[in-house]
Image (tube, rainbow, N blue to C red; front, top):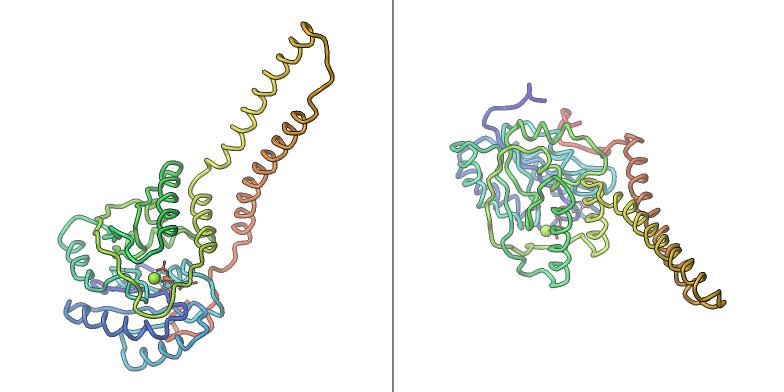
Length: 318
Ligand code: UDP
Ligand code: MG
């Protein structure tokens, strides 16, 4: 990879899932900004198994503009896989990921590029300072997620951080080298380290189309993030076990003493049932946590491809 890297070339990776409307707007606006920057660039459009005309739009764009390349997946593999395909195929010394819906303002690019050129940073990342236009419940759960994951994992994950960031080649190579199947990029970017400059901006709503994330989809993604970057849930199981043993021991002493002093009145069916159900519940809960980790390990050991390419703009794409 690094051998083919082109000095000063900027690679923009754009994951697209059903973005036929937004993509043209994105292309026009972003090209305008890139032309003012007077740099060489390539746009890598990744069609993540779209069901609309996204691929058709990509074919047209790459035909009329030699700076545009595209990769089309055989089905929907998810944004993480699309980003990974983009990283693997990027040729630039600088690489950025951008959403196709204009929620990552291209107008920030010149400033991000200048920071990497002039200052001693390896990446410029962006974070939203507000969540304007997002539902209250979604924002609340998002905040909760960031609190939890930062308490229990050692990869720093910034609240409001977007995947939109411009990175130098050495950081991109580090990200590529983390070839795990269950990917959580916000965690991976933090985990690989390097010096990152944080650029805040006001939230922008998407220009066209609708978000492809359902509430449950996001919840699953959040759980993935926690499990991929922390073993704390596994420890919870041991702590529960320890606590329950301690409680049972205290109860045992209590019962023996009571028997010695007051004899043995047969009573307490209800309380016995409560204890049995409670312990059963905790056991199942802990088994569930372990199951999550085992499931991840299982998928990881299969060593499957991250994505399968159905069509691409050029022969070098892999
Ligand atoms: N995306 C993708 N594959 C998916 C879902 C989304 O490539 O399975 C792309 C999508 O086209 C967009 C970006 O990922 O460019 C962010 O998605 P979206 O705007 O739906 O998410 P949100 O901004 O609401 O978090
Ligand atoms: Mg969006």
